[in-house]
Length: 342
Image (cartoon, rainbow, N blue to C red; front, top):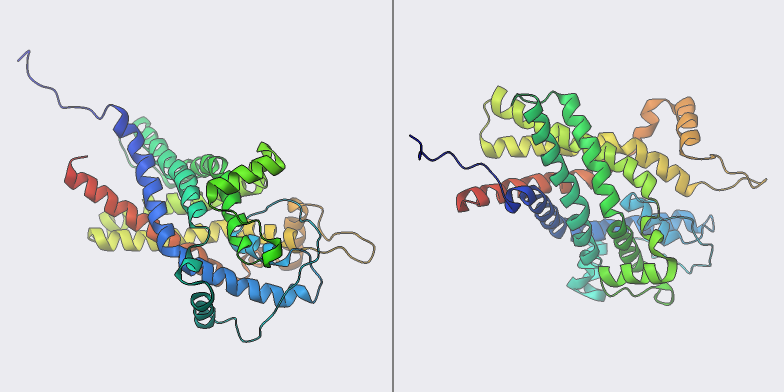
C-alpha cells in the first residue's frame, strides 16, 4: 500500500556520534580502574631507573623514567641537576602502595587522572569512533560481507593515526602531571589539573609544543591500533561464529587476544624510542644512533628481529589490561544502550 511505513534507517546526530561517545566512555572507565595500578608501577619503575641512572649522572632522570613508562617522547631533555633520594628496599608493589597511602593518602593513586581521562576523551574517542565508521563504510562497500583481515588492519592503522593526532596534547599533559609527582618539591610544576597543564604548556612553550613527539607517537599508535582493533574484530568472528562461544566468553577471549596483539605490534616501536631516549654520547661526543631508522637497522644487525621484543612480558602486562577493560566496558555500554532503545 502507498501509505505503508518503511523501516526507519539510522539517521540523525546520535547514530553518527554514538561510536565516538561509546569509545571515549569505555576508555575513560578503563583508565579510572587502571590509574592506581599505573601510578604504583610508575613509582616502582622510577625507583629502579633512578638507581641505574643516578650512577650515570643522567639529567632529568625521573622524568625520563616517567616518559619511558608511558611510551612517549617529550622532546629534548633539559640538562639540570637533580637531587635523588634512593631508599633501598622500597621498590616492591606492596611497599610502594603502603608508602603512598601513608605519605599522601588515597589521592596519590589518582594524580594525573584528569589528564588520563582527557586523553581517553580525545585519543580513544577518535580512534574507536573512527574505526567503527571506517569499518562500517568498508562493509557497505563489500556488499555487507565480513571484511578480510587486511582491510580491518588498514582501518586500524588509519584510526590509530587519527586518534594519536587528536590525543597528543592530552598525552603530553598526562606525562607532565604524572612525572611531576616524582620530582623533588622545588622542581615540580604544580599543575592543578589537565586543563591547567595545557594552559601552562601553551603559555610557556607555545601552541605547537602540544604536539611535541607527535611523529613517533602517531607511528606507535598506528601499530598498536592495527593490532588491537583488527585482532579484536577478527577474534569476535572466530570465537562467536566458528567456536560458538557465548557473548561473555567471546568478549573476554577477543579482548585478551586484542591486548596481546596490541602489545606485540607496538613494542618494536616502543623499543626503538626507548633506545633513542636513553642513548648517551661516547668519549668523542657522538651518539650511537643518528635517529630512529639508524637505530632500527643497527638493532637488526646486532640482535635480529627478536631484539625488538626485549621485555615483552612486562610490556604486555602494562598494555594489555587497559585494552581488555576498554573492550569489556564498550560491550557493556552497547548492551545498556540496546536495552534502553538507544
